[in-house]
Image (cartoon, rainbow, N blue to C red; front, side, top):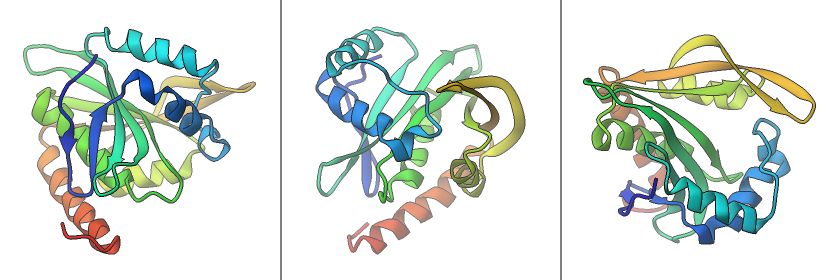
Length: 197
C-alpha cells in the first residue's frame, strides 16, 4: 500500500518504497551476507519494479526504505503487512527487515516500524518471525525488548532447506517502554555518528 509521508526519526527516516528502488531492494536482499537468513528475491530489476507497483495496491501492506537523514542514502528496508484490523486495532506483521552491513540503523528502524504500527495504524499488537538459526537478529529482538513467544509453525525455505522460526511480538501496553528504550538507543547512535540529536 503506498503511503505518502516519510516517518522522521532521530538519525534515520522511513519513506515508502517506490519502483525506482527496485535495484536497491534486489541488491540488499540478495547480498550474500544478508541472504543467508532471507528467502531470495528471484527475478530482474524489472520484475521487482512490477512487484513494488502491485504492492502499492495491497491494502494493509506497508513497505519502507530506511534512509540516513543526514546523507539521504538508503540503508535498509522494513515492512508491515497482513494487517488484520478489528474493533481494537488488530494485528500486523513486521518483516522485510534488513539493513546494510555496518549500518547502525537497526534499532531506529525497529523503533520507527513499531511507531508506525502503534501510532499511525493504531494496532493492538505487532508480531514477526526470525529464522531459528539467525542468532544475530534473535539477540537483537530480545535486546530491544520484544517478547519471545518461542517456536512458531511458520517456516521458510531458503535454497533446499526449510527453516523453523521464532515468533516475537510487542503489544500496545508494552509499546511505551519499548519506545523509551529505543529512543535512548537512537540518540546514542546519533552521538556515536558525531551528529546532534
